[in-house]
Amino acid sequence: MNKNCKAVWESCLSVIKDNINHQSYKTWFEPIKAVKLENNILTIQVPSQFFYEWLEEHYITLLKKTVKKELGSEGRLEYSIIMENSYNNGPPFTIKFPTSNKKATGNPFVNMPIDLNRGSSKEIPNPFIIPGLRKIKVNSQLNENYSFENFIEGDCNRLARSAGYAVAGNPGKTAFNPLLLYSNVGLGKTHLAHAIGLEVKNNFPEKTVLYVTSEQFANQFIDAVRNNSKNDFVHFYQMIDVLIIDDIQFLLKKEKTQEIYFHIFNHLHQNSKQLIITSDKPPVEMEGMNARLLSRFKWGLSADLQVPDLETRIAIINKKLYKDGVEMPKEVIEYLAYSIVTNVREMEGALISILAQSSLNKKAITLELAKKMIDKFVKNTSREISIDYIQKVVCDYFGLPLEAIHSKTRKREIVQARQLAMYFSKRMTKASLATIGQHCGKKDHATVLHACRTVNNLIDTDKQFRNYVEELDKKITL
Image (cartoon, rainbow, N blue to C red; front, side, top):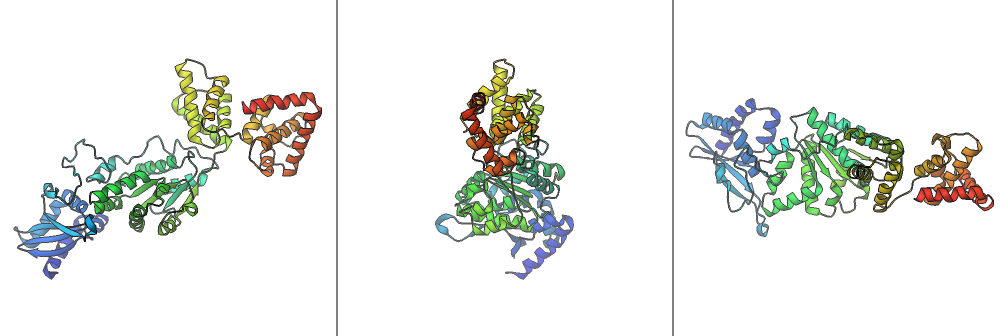
């Protein structure tokens, strides 16, 4: 390599370094190599066509001035771009472009659409296509409705929410990098991921935030390989400040996609960029995931979101109603919260069905209407009777407050209601005796067994009590 070209480029860099911030210099100029100086034309090698486009758009004036300062008024700059050859696994090759000639980039080897109408309203089909970075600052693919304000905190998600809020206040600089959020479907991990991204944008408008599903990521990578633009794909993602990948489990067994994500992950993490990942399972259960990736997922924090308790489910419904400016009877809200317990998304879907039915048919929202809609909805989503719901039905039947079952009082009617709640919980749920006891006034498993025996004896000997049981059975399974 001609030493003279190196010296000229070093002189150019010393000027450039004084005119831009350190991070921009490190990102856009440190990877460049000077390869030739001939006839007052300085040739520099850049890693990809994306680099070339970015330099031409943002730094061309500075580059021209520095080159002319070193080589005189006749001095010119030429780019040498490393291209991957995806045909027949051939070796990489280079193509050369003179400066300020971006329209010459249409070449037979690079089938990558480039938007030459800067600032136009033309849609870019994939977020990494040049000039993706500019577009992405406007559209991060985040849902404005999924904010922290609309995320209800409870014991089920407190750790995950607190970690997410800490990340949003100091992205890339906390111990929670990467932050892996995992849970079963419909429990709020996607909502929380969006909320973190939105909060980062509010706190740090200059940062580039991108939300992308793993399916989008994989499809973009396939397109990049097909179009021989893998370098541009990688460099685009390496420019993101906060990268949110949703449902990472869909990359299981996709070895090439995992490998490219591994390199992007490493680059971002080493440069203190924030990584957020969601999954329907913890890292230890991700069979088919690259071992190196799994080890990196464990560098930060893995936080699970569990099934929300009754109070949290009621709070979620009330928040939704308040946001929509709708009022609903308390007993309807409670019935909905008791009926759908394992999936918040399904619960919100049932709520929308009730509101729609009421609005379209101009009917008041009553418990009877709610039962018809919820029961129809639950039949389509495999209803799961909960201990909480059984307690609610039993207390309503006897006209008792729910707190009575959890109290230590020995009043006959309350003891009887508690025993019935234990009996139906054992019969209709998969909960253990210890779990049932904990839900019914923190009793032990022996007390639950005694309650079940007592109820069975009374069914055989007391006609009135047998009627209670039959009626409660119908109400619970209605």
